[in-house]
Each structure stands twice: as structure tokens, then as C-alpha cells.
Image (cartoon, rainbow over all chains, first blue to last red; front, side):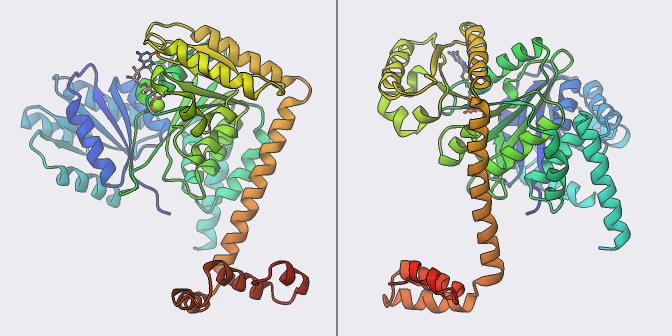
Length: 132
Length: 337
Ligand SMILES: Nc1nc2c(ncn2[C@@H]2O[C@H](COP(=O)(O)OP(=O)(O)OP(=O)(O)O)[C@@H](O)[C@H]2O)c(=O)[nH]1
Ligand SMILES: [Mg+2]
């Protein structure tokens, strides 16, 4: 049997908007993925969880303006801990130029702004697994 | 696969195993994934890890959905870690019957910081299991055990039979109920009474907890009059932080009971026997389906059963009897008549 894609979903920091992440998690489950739902977490906990859960993908939601610091920190810690193969996705509200910068300079695999369709997200995750 | 590649994979496996035995989390997590998906290296991994396991104390935790199992696990992990135990947790959630995917939500209850508390938490989907949930949880917990986890807690939702099997395969089984767990008939029906070493009535901050505890005690009085270990009943409220220390102490009481008169050995040997029986059946049925039963024959019998010329039971017996063929005695006891 092939391994199902394991996704770790977390809200960065003290983000209180939970519906979005939970909804996305439900959709990923229906797309056949195994989603470990973490809730609010800081980068250290997220990376610790990614290690123990042997995650292929980490999904971070952010709505409170901490995306430029905490997002890249997750990527950096993952690399330091030998989890450089993990693809990090981000979703949430941020200026489009920040999204471009996160992808181009900070090792975020893909940033999804609020109006992204669920199909796009699912396909994005699946294709990131095929590349590697 | 080329010889060179094969060797490289073996070397990688050996490195993983070595690192896991030294307690490295990343290697341990990787091994669990491999075993979980039934990777072809699984027998090798288990062969190398098994001799190093058997030292941990295994605690099973089951009960209806939302009873507070994970919240209690979080509290217990903290208490165990405070007494300097290295703890491992495996939390199983059901998977979607449609997509095979799963939303694993137990980890969200773990607020024990990993900098302060030394634990390893792994979420697992029930549907994923190649060869059954009890196989994967057993093998994963043995890997945690071999990697130096001294207490291994397995959380499963007590709804189906395989989940109960998982709980039964541990040293101490906690059944978590709530005031909403209903009357004793429901508890009996769910098969929870027979497997519990310890009952917990959680959410005792809500009305009705006393009633549940009372009715559980009543059932135990009737059932356990002759048994050596009479399950203890604890009332807890994680919300009010009540009863958790008593529960923790109660777990160690059962642990002490296991240390006496070879109780632990008896229990584990019984479980090993069950596991062996199960594995023999699995091995045999694998062989049967891969090498012995031929499709043409089956189709032929399907047609006969469809026409009601032969019953399904006798059709099955016919196949088995033909396979056993030569052995007349076996044939007689396995007659299609
Ligand atoms: N009132 C009250 N609520 C509690 C108590 N313990 C847990 N809860 C709540 O019950 C809900 C479920 O808790 P969990 O620990 O996730 O329960 P669970 O049994 O692990 O749930 P599943 O794994 O989904 O079956 C959460 O919202 C908890 O906050 C308690 O003692 N009192
Ligand atoms: Mg739970």
C-alpha cells in the first residue's frame, strides 16, 4: 500500500481564527490525506510535531501579521532538525508582495491567499509530493 | 533493484534502527511510518527492534468519542514525566470510509511542552493499518518501547471491536466514561466492562457522574466477585483539575498488582498467544489467496451457489477439502456433507 500524504496543520502563534484551518483540514481528509490537527502553535512545537508525526507537508495558517517572522522560522527549524524535505505551505491574509517574498526567499513552497479554491490547494499539495 | 541499491537501503535501515535505539525521534518516527504502511523491510525492522522491547509499561485508554481521553492523556503524561519517565503516546482516530483519509485531532490536547516534558506523541489513523489496527499499534508501540520510552500509552476510541482489541493488548486498560455515557446496558453492550482494569468517570463536574460511578460499581460487584483484580472506579474532572492525582496513583496500584505472583507474565503470555494465533491465521490466509485458491474454481462455484445448487458454506468446504486433497482423515473431519 502506498503511503498516504501526511499533513500537519497548525495556526501560527496565537491566531484565533480557527474555522479556516479546520475546514481546509476536513477537505484534505476527504481528498484522502492524513491530517494531524495541531491548533495554535509556535514554530518549535510545530517542528517537534512534524518530526514525531513524520509529516510530509506542514500547513500554516496566519491572519495576525506574524507570517514574515514565524513562517520562515518553521522552514529554518525544519532544516536544522533534518526535516528539510518537508514542504511548507501557508494560507491566510497577507499583502501579495509578502506572499511572493515568502516563496522566493524564505523557502515556503506555496502561499495561498484567502480566495484560493480548495481544489487548487489539494492539487498543490499532491503535486509537491510528485516533484520530490 | 540492483544489488548496490539494495545494500544502500539496508545500510540506511540499519542506521535508522541504530539511531532509534539511541532514542532519536526522527529515526523512530520514520521506522513507525515504514512499519505502519507494511513496508517490505518491516520484518527486518521488527526483528532488530523486538529484542530491545519489553521494558515499557503499556497503558491502554479507551472510551466513547469525546469522553476526554486525550485531555487525560495530557495530564498523565505530565505526571509520568515529572517522575522522570520517558513517555510514548499512540493516539488512534478513525478514518473516513470514503476517502481513506483521516483528521487526527488528539494532539491538539497535548499542551505539555516538549522542552520540559520528555514524550513522543504519534497520531495514527485506524483505516491505514495493513493487517489490522492491532498489528500496527502493537508494532509501533514496540518501536517506541525499544527506543527507550518507559511508559507507552495507546489511546483508541472505543466504538468497534478492533479498538477494544488494541486496549486489551496492554498491561493496564483504562475505560473513560462520562455522565453522558448512559445506563449500564450501554456500557455492557459496548464490551467495556470486561476489558477495564480501571474505570474513569470523567467530566464529573457535570450532573450524573455519581450515578454512573454507582452503576459501574454495581456491575463490578456482580461480575468480579471471584476475580483477583477488582477494577477501581475514579471520578475525574480535567476541567476542575480534580481526581487526576488519584487516578495516577490508581494506575501504579494496578502496576504493583501486575508485579505480584507473575500476573504481568501471565497477562503478556496470554496476549502473545492470541497474537500468534492471529498471525498464523493471517499468514495462512495470505498463502491461501496468493498461491492456492484459483480464480477459475471460485467463479465456477459462484455460479453454482448463484443457482442454489450448493450452499456457500459447502462450496467453501469443497475448495478447502479439495486442497487438503490427499489427507483422507482431514477430509473426513472437513467433509462437505
Ligand atoms: N466539562 C468537562 N469537559 C471536559 C473534561 N475533560 C475533557 N473535556 C472536554 O471534552 C472535549 C473532548 O475532550 P478530548 O480529550 O478531546 O476527548 P477524547 O475522548 O480524546 O475525544 P476523541 O479522541 O475525539 O474520542 C473537549 O472539549 C474537552 O475540553 C472535563 O473533565 N469536564
Ligand atoms: Mg482523543
